[in-house]
Amino acid sequence: MSRTPPEPVIGTFVIDMPLPPPGTMGPPTQYGWLRRECPLAEVRLPIGATAWYATRYEDVRDLVADPRLIRPTINDWPPRPDRAVDDEPGLITMMELEGSRHAALRRALAELFSVRSIRRRLPHLRQSADRLLEEFVDGGQPGDLVAGFLEPFPLLAMCDLVGIPYEDRAYFLPRADAALGAMVTLDEGREVTAQLRGYMSSLLDRKRRKPADDILTGLVHACGHGNLDGESMVGFGLSMLVAGYRTSTMFLADAVVALLTVPGQYARLRDDRGLMPGAVDELLRYIPVMNGVVVLQAVEEFELHNRRIHAGDAVLPVLAAANRDERVFTDAERLDLCRADNPHLTFGRGAHNCLGAHLARAQMTVCLEALFERFPDLHVPHGHPPTWDDASPSKSPLTLPVGW
Ligand code: HEM
Image 1 (tube, rainbow, N blue to C red):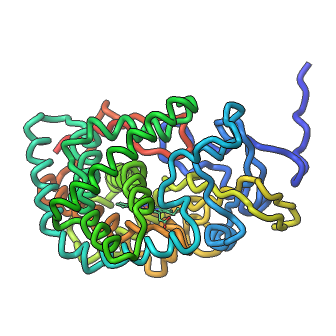
Image 2 (cartoon, rainbow, N blue to C red):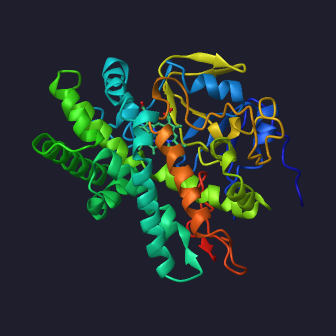
């Protein structure tokens, strides 16, 4: 006997976290409906916990900068049965710092991540891109652009700027992955976190003894002048290990997929480089990687859309859903490389907005220019589609075979 599923009653049901359609970067098809009918939905996340899911532009914009919401540490959220109340706080990065310590760190870093500083690094960034592409070509075609270029390039760029030895990646990458991984047990989490903290402390010591033209040296200098404490510096270094390049890799890989698969877009930008600054921001708006990745936790009770959010509740302002809100972006589902008015939320907002926004834009510009010059006829060969991890809410191709 077939049974009609009960009609959902808005406001009382929990939905599974929407995922991008298989084999695509997304966004999930439900976002239009959620924005219209259920702008604050209760969702069950793949890890089992539930959270409030905000999808409208103005809600996302306000929530991400709302002081009633904090960024919980990986150990504090999602709730874990094996966590004791007096446990070490675990992996504290810059994102979880609050108040005056966070403000002092942001002040110390502002000039080091400014447009001016990043612009000074552009020729060096371009050299790194060209060197990687030269090695990539040697591998023959079709070649996997993710492994050959889109993954190493942002990591190399971040390491150079911050002063983390790129040669150490075999040590810190697996540990950073483990520290973030949902599968890691509390004991393993403690161990890899201690190892990463030890690595960062000794790197800062080396900068003290042998200063260089990089951000860690700049921080050591600020610390010497009493503007900063040692713990905040370690927290910044850990943020770079866990968040300073992976998002860029995902954005670059999705940007190349979008340009190669939306007809005519790769050639359009290749032939009119004047479009580049606006096109980079349109790609940042259009690409839905920031899909449920900003997790906040309420520290006091408040109400939104007639729903009561309690202290301790998790709230996810979905930047990727806000960026497709038709009430703010005309023809929001379309990639429009000439879009003029583009107040996208991809880099967040408020005290914790993305510190690396100028670097991320510079990486995307340099990456695309290097590709246009070396591979004017870049394409995805027939029979070699990109591969995706369809279980993840935040997606970029695992492999992207290309010909040229
Ligand atoms: C396209 C690439 C990137 C995107 C879309 C992105 C996005 C974001 C977003 C949305 C936040 C705010 C999270 C929140 O509100 O909790 C953030 C924070 C941050 N991002 Fe990025 N990011 C990118 C690349 C980078 C790069 C390349 C770096 C540095 C090398 C970086 C460093 C940071 C840091 C340190 C924070 C924390 C700032 C704070 O807590 O004060 N990001 N990023």
